[in-house]
Amino acid sequence: MGKFYVTTPIYYVNDVPHVGHAYSTIAADVLSRFYRSLDYDVFFLTGTDEHGQKVAKAAEERGLDVQKHVDEMVVPFKELWKRLEIDSGFIRTTEKRHEIVVQAIFEKLREKGDIYPGKYEGWYCIFEETFYPESQIEEGKCPECSREVKWVSEDSYFFKTSNYIPRLHKHIEENPDFIMPKSRRNEVLSYIESGVQDVSVSRTAIKWGVKVPGDEKHVVYVWFDALINYLSGIGYHPDKKKQDPNFKKFWPADVHIIGKDILKFHAVIWPAMLMALGEDLPKMIFAHGFLTVGGEKISKSRGKVIDPNELIDKYGADAYRYFFMSQFTFGLDGEYTEETMIKRINADLANDLGNLVHRTANMMKKYYEGNVPNPKYSQSDKEGLTRDIKIQINGIPNHLKRYLKVLDFSKSLAAIWHTISLLNKYIEDMAPWQLHKEERNDELAKVMYTLADGIRAVAQFIYPFMPQTAEKIWKQIGATGDLKRFPETKPDIKDLNDWVVLKPGSNFKIAEPLFPRIEE
Ligand code: MSP
Image (cartoon, rainbow, N blue to C red):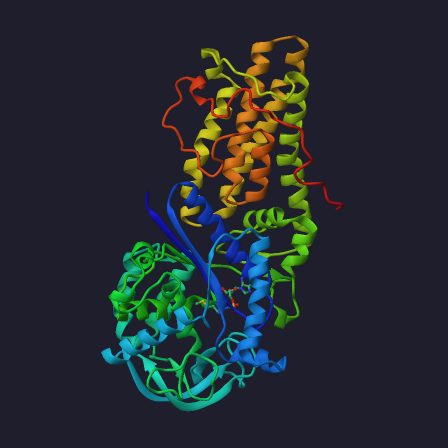
């Protein structure tokens, strides 16, 4: 099977993680679990961006040594990822393994003439860690976040970004999936068509950062340093002899998941850096939208904080993961309210999914002492509702492959939930209680088996999105196979008896409701 390498941005440790950070990270985790379940060799990398002025300033405000500050601040990130069942590699830019690579890359590009000394004069926004041309500054304010910018005039090394723009332009034109969604691709194209300047890649006014080799009054610009994590995190080194086999195996990245605000760094500067290094470009850069409250980006500085930990305390990790992946279209902005979250949890999780499992468990207990019956499907079932259910379930793996290829999480979940609705409707239509009463035992066995095996399939489908719930269901239905191996769509359905996956005789137990209803 193939390999799959997915990354998230590495997060600044000036503050604790918030819902925006969790959003990218959950998305990457879903993809990574999905591809693992398809038997891909997966590497999922997340981490923390610990250099730069913004982090140094946060440490100063706390009256702490910067190293001590970052060592403390990385903890809430790691803890949150653990609570959210994030199964990933983790890189910190203050780790030696990263700093060494940053320095080696700097040195290599300087030797090549792609990095050259000069003088930077212009405006700098500490919050965005970005240089802006005069033309974008109005009344001394950052064009992105409206904070005050600082005039910087200092010796600086520059990276010859402009050299690589024609090639990058061609690459974007020829590879429609390179920058996703389309609107972002157009944004990048018009940006580069308006002309791209070489980027300043070192600072002398600050101390906190990776030292420029051989010229230690400079530290490497935080973005140049941070982007390299995607390489250093899988064991890259510009000297091939020093590369880890993981690098060869996993590079190029299959998808860099980012927020739309950091698109230019990822879709312009980063590809230019890779071209300069002679490395392949990532296959896809996907920029998701912002989570908003009252139409405004959720961020502490705007006084809008939503603490993921609080939501997990209240609703659990899986409900959290489900809500953020199902509610919003990944490439667009999405307005968050707790009320919508509660509604979704009640409707989709407590009602649709929870009731399906609960009702089936109760009937299984009543009619079969909990032991899943052995169905004998016949030709006539081919025409009926049972067949419809099987066909629906059979189609899901291919749907999910298609949707997740373009990071359409909400459509993927909608397809799964459509199946869940059909299974619920199937209960109503087939009325097992009636079959039981009338002692139509063969029919009852088929219906009850179809339900149990349908739930088995649902558990496998939701596993990448809600791993804890999937495990719970798996245990509850007494399944013995591998939950994490994703089912394949079968080309044709000839005999429904070929579709017996969950072992007849499995013990389907009654358990606590998966998602208790929340007061609305
Ligand atoms: N350190 C840089 C990234 C370096 S990657 C080589 C950085 N860090 S960040 O912590 O400020 O932001 C990380 C990500 O969180 C960004 O992709 C940003 O878009 C995302 N979000 C921050 N607030 C957000 C929302 N309100 N909604 C969704 N995501 C947003 O930038």
